[in-house]
Length: 244
Image 1 (cartoon, rainbow, N blue to C red):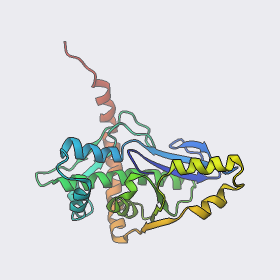
Image 2 (image 1 turned 90 degrees about the vertical axis):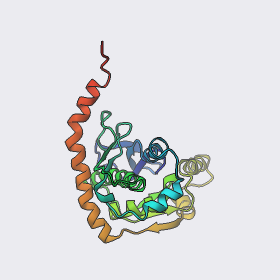
Image 3 (image 1 turned 60 degrees about the vertical axis):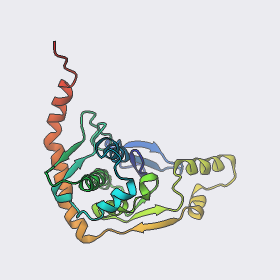
Image 4 (image 1 turned 45 degrees about the vertical axis):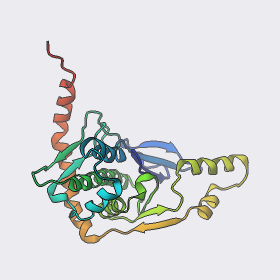
């Protein structure tokens, strides 16, 4: 689910708890959900467009320009921790970072770097989910962010997984309606309803060449956060200093 924030929702039998994720019950008996809840994915895109680029270009215009930028954005990396971060690092002191700015950095490079950085953060959650024993063969995406073909393709390339876009991206509202129907007795098995109503509108397949390249970029993304973690904490400790 990609909007202002991004939430990776992973169904499981409940035997693979990891404190990197929020754990809640599934609507299906004896199943649970693990939530990799990130804070500011779409919010980072909005911040860049409004506060830095001053809305000089629309989302479609920036997206078109960003498609002409090669993966990796000439070394530019974005840490999307604009409001701290929840899953999987759970660090309220973490902050957003553009690393690798040069005099040749363009708005479209910054825009693509934000899309890549949020995809790397998603990959971090997927990696830990797999390490916990959760099977992840495909990502099914809903929400406003799923309307961006470029973002979907970047996610597929970073993760090395297909990104399936659902025909109905209403998300929670539709799920609530299904559960209400189950509770009222309109139908007896939630799985039957899902199988008969949920359909795929589009599927983005990973480009192997891009995925192999992004593996190296993802490692740098992870190393960058680890290198700055102590600085984030130190900065938070001194942020409220008031001179006399």
